Image (cartoon, rainbow, N blue to C red):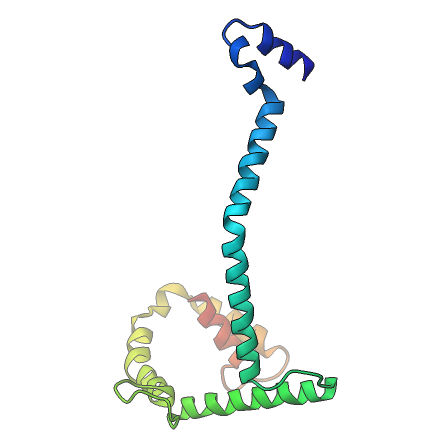
Length: 165
């Protein structure tokens, strides 16, 4: 740093501004800029963090009072919340939920529509004969069966072949 300072003080182009040159000045200047930026944005960050904390606290209050519960009560509360979610999910899949829009398909109606309209067309577009040879099918089927006798194509063999497509 001493040689850097001497360079700027003795060089004819930099001697008038030597006090504003070098790594020491750069370090102080960058530190000052960073400090100013932090002071400028820290209040907004603090406000946002407090707002998010308040929102999270309000949401937690919706799920029940979380104060001074034993571990057993906390587990019971979590299990209750999971059961409630499962019931809502089951209602949505069955299409009997109270919160559904009647202008579109939901749950089992949507699943049925996919399996009766979309899925068959997609399956018909797959050219399995060009992707799988008879030897591929035979090897996968034999590997899935092992030493047992087989009457039908095992699920494992079918799944393996479908994954290859």
